[in-house]
Image 1 (cartoon, one colour):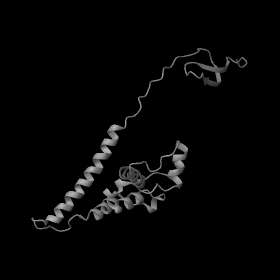
Image 2 (image 1 turned 90 degrees about the vertical axis):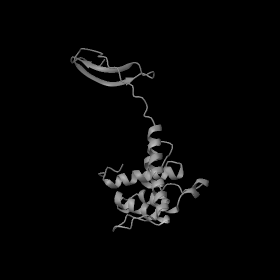
Image 3 (image 1 turned 60 degrees about the vertical axis):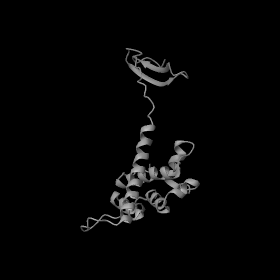
Image 4 (image 1 turned 135 degrees about the horizontal axis):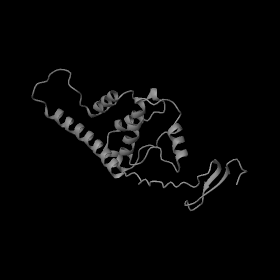
Length: 177
């Protein structure tokens, strides 16, 4: 919106918007019209999480969502791997660095299952959200040639019903009609 080039941190911001909506149940920057929404994205912070549903997720997840929604790209999480590390740290599960014994303690398996379940839930909710949201059906415009004369058309406007066109034109060098 500022006209700056988009980079991978724009994707981090977009992920933050989706994560915020999934956690809070509301769109982070929704306002009454597009101009107010863009202004909110540029200048305002999303509302605090509230409500009875908040108890169902760790507070660290809210911090991750807010870090993804930082206004300045350099203050956001800088990469998808950094984001994955933050979520991993939140879940208490980390990627092993060295080979482990084949028998894992029960608590580690449980944490891994919870982390996998959380990740699958987030991905599933996102997929359902995309599937439910349908794009409005686009109508194909009908074009009809209005004149075969040469000239310049000025001030063309559609009538309020959208079915007719009113215009002024200079045809073949004659005055405006």
